[in-house]
Length: 435
Image: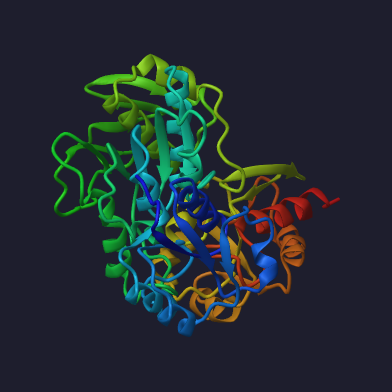
């Protein structure tokens, strides 16, 4: 791909935008990065890349470019993006841009929950098979950075959000993984259907020679690739769970009891990774060896400590209701739940039966605490806390010996924290400071 003599506008000065700008420059483009942030946000921009801080809709209206590459954090339907799109020869996202340069095997992973764990598992299995592989995209380095190394990996495990999939055109993964779906990001999308349609784009350019690894019962229209199904809770998939063992074609191929993967959600992540590995010719034996000592990512059902007979679980990565439901289903001890955060417009009524079954009390935090309390208070006892540290203290007082304090917010963190990682770190520190 040669961009010599082409004007390239990159929207967004974050990780994805910077990676796209570096790639465009390497390909010979005349690159300018635009962002509404001040000049300080553009620190350490590579020499030769022009910057335009404090960009506005008016800036976009006056911009003409052969190619505009938008970062996933910028709403594609917003006025800012639309203004730049008007004068663009082509308007794409960073994943589409990098995909046009990369020549190796692409495994794309999407779903509302489980993407990061599955992406890590696939990278680990690929490397165990002797291939070079980079986990990238929505997790790890941006795709554009992964393709710019001196020797590009032979495969990428590419975690894909709906935001990234909105702006593909020709992007075609050799294997597309669909883990699950539940409402999320209703602060960006006008409807659940719009959110689902964005994610479904992962399949739209696949053909019969490609593979689609899909959770059983997802009812996905228009998938042209060969389908391989999995489920830890329903019978009939190509991969199923019997006890603690993953079963396919009548054979037990992996006992999860020999790994550190726990819960139905992690069983399905492992199934999806195994199905992907088989689709690219990797043996069951290599998969089993690769998963033997794998440790799941922090902030996802992470056991922080046991104090006075109470387990403290950090599930800060539960930024939506499906993740919260998965965490609740994995509980086998009486629980106090700490939940709440940013108001994303989600409907919590569907989780009430699980709360009644699994939770003795909820400690609520964040901007959603009052409205969420109104929804759940008739189902379970509620308390409010002004900070996460205070919530941990309150939960400690409410928990019983032999029980669990589960921090699974069910929404995002940006009302109080810079991200779920920072939120989880505060929870972990607060728990470890308990006496």
